[in-house]
Image (tube, rainbow, N blue to C red):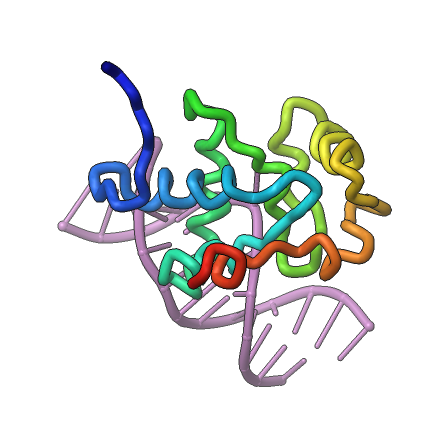
Length: 120
DNA sequence: AATGTGACATACC
DNA sequence: TGGTATGCCACAT
């Protein structure tokens, strides 16, 4: 019975799970920005909260592909928070995302906007 | 309760 | 062109 199907509508879970949900919805081989997620959640200026949520992502039972979330620049700003400093880049490269100098190449090509892809 | 911090974003100098 | 400053909201101490 413990089907913990997390829902964004669960106000009980707040911002965090909402962020996690969106991040999990990111297709393989794609990436998005903190601002885009926060915008999708309604707090367009709360990008920092998204980053905060990611910080807690490792505490979640359900895996969250935090490596698919980068800043507006396409830069892997949070790679230091991963298991290894290179874990994030490696994970992205596995998904056919080219990373050079801690930055996603051709970022707009892999960019995945939840407000558009999820149908705003 | 108040202050500080944070994996960002935008504006200004 | 890049550093500094402020906004934003939630969490930790």
